[in-house]
Length: 258
Length: 313
Ligand SMILES: Nc1ncnc2c1ncn2[C@@H]1O[C@H](COP(=O)(O)OP(=O)(O)OP(=O)(O)O)[C@@H](O)[C@H]1O
Ligand SMILES: [Mg+2]
Image 1 (spheres, rainbow over the protein chains, first blue to last red):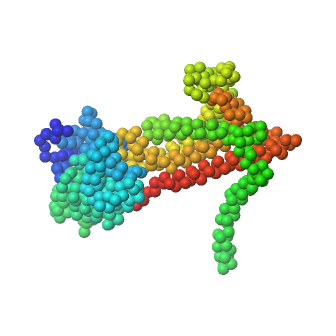
Image 2 (cartoon, chains in turn brown, purple; image 1 turned 135 degrees about the horizontal axis):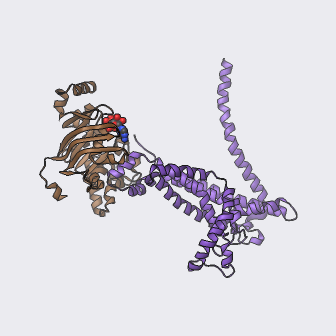
Image 3 (cartoon, rainbow over the protein chains, first blue to last red; image 1 turned 120 degrees about the horizontal axis):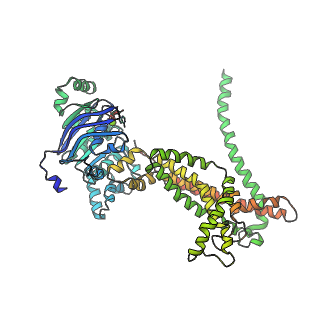
C-alpha cells in the first residue's frame, strides 16, 4: 500500500475514458472524471443514464454482471484497478459500496459491522475497536450500543442503511460508493443518512448516486451530470445548480429542482 | 336484490368452514381409529418394549431411526452440496440441465426406487462397496461382519446399509430442491454486498446465503425426515426384513413402516392371531404418527424461531 500511496497525485480515484458496453449497446461513453481526497461528488442524471453502471465500474463490480465490457482506465492512487495483476477483492476492500436497499446480513448488528474484518481473521480486540468506531462514524452507535447482539434485521430501514455504511467503513476504505442509498427510506431516515455522509466527507472520498437533486444540493461539493452514458457536465454544486453551462443540464436541474 | 346480497354474504360466511372441516375431520378420524384399534386401555404400555415375541415395538422404532436419521444426514449434506453448486458455482447451462433433473427425480414414485434398489443397487453395492468395507473397514464398530454374516451374504447387498442408501437417494431430490430454491431466493444485492466487502463466493455462501436460507434448510430437513421415516415399500424391498436389531450395517432389520407393509396382509387374513396382529400394527401406526407429529411441531417451532423477518424498508 505504501508504495502506491507515495505516488504523487492529487486524485484518489482517476477515471479516464471509461467506456462500458453490453454487446452493441454503449452504457458509458468515454467518461473521464477525477475524485480528490475528502470530497463528496453527487452523480445525477435521468433514469437509465448509466449512474449505477458508473459507480459499479469504479470497484470492478461490473465484473459480476455477465456480458459487460469495460474499456479505458480507473486509477486508484495511481494504479489501474483493471490491471490483470490486480485482485478485485483488494480493490473492493479499498472502495466500499452501499446499495439502494439496505442489505444487512442475517446475523447480529455487531457481526454485520464486523463482517469485513472477520474475513481477514482480525484479532478480537481489534474487531471490537473497529466496529465501535465504524458505528460511531456511521452515526448509529448511540442507537445500538446497548443491543449489539440483536439481529440486524430487527432494525428500522434507516438504521439498517446506516449499519450498511458502518459495515463498509469498518474495513477502512478510502472511497465509499453509494448508489441511491436513501431512495428506500422515509424523510427522517434520509436526513440521518445525509448527516452521516456529511460527516464522512471530511475523511474519505464519497461518490453518491442520487436521483434527488435536492439531496445533491444539500450535501455534495460537486455534481456530475450524466446523460445517455455521457458525462455532460461536472462542477461545484452551486455552479451546476445556478449557472449550468449546458442546456441539457439546465433542463434536468430545472425539471427536478425548482 | 336484498335477498341476493344476503345469500352471497351468507355463502362467504360458511364455505371456509366446510373446507376447514376436511383436514380436521381426517385427523380426528385417523387418530380415533388408531387409538381404538390399538386398544391401549387393555394392553397399556406393554408394547413399549424390546421383546419382539411379546409384541414389543421398540425394535422397530429403533430400526426406523437407524435408517431415517443417517439417510437424512446424508441427503442434507449431499443436497446442500448440489444446491450450492447449482445456484452459485455451475455455469448457467449446466444448472439448466441439473435443476429439471432434480425436479423430475423428486416426483418418481417410491416403488420405482425400491425395484431399482432391489435389482440393481443391492448387488452393485453389495459386491463392491459392502464387501470391501467388511474386509478393510472392519476396525470400525458396526462395519465389522459378525461370524454368521459371511462375505457371500454381505455381497447380496440387502440390509440396513442398503436401506439407508436407498432412502438417501429417495429423499435427496426433495431436500436438494427445497434448499436450492431457498438459496435462489437470496437477494442479489445481499450477494453483491458480501462480495463488495471483499468476500469470496464461498465466504458469502457460508456466512450470508445459507443463514439467509435457513428456513428452507430446516424445511428440507423436516420434510426429508418425514418421508424417510414413513417410507414403506422401498425399504421393505431392500432391508432384508427381520424382527431384530441389526448386529452390523449389513444385517437385516425392520422399520415400523416396513413391518406394517410386510405383515398387514397376513393380519388382514384373520385367523386366530389376526386380531392381535391388527392391534399390534395399529400401535405401530400410532407411534409412527406421533413421531411425525412431534417432528412437525418441532419443525414449525424451529422455523418460526429462526425466522429472519425483513424488518424496515
Ligand atoms: N447488463 C446489462 N446489459 C445491457 N444493458 C444494461 C445492463 N445493465 C444496465 N443496462 C442498461 O444500461 C443503461 C444504464 O443503466 P444504469 O443501471 O447504469 O442506469 P441508472 O442511471 O443507474 O438508472 P436508474 O436511475 O434507473 O437507477 C440502462 O439503459 C440499462 O437498461
Ligand atoms: Mg441505478
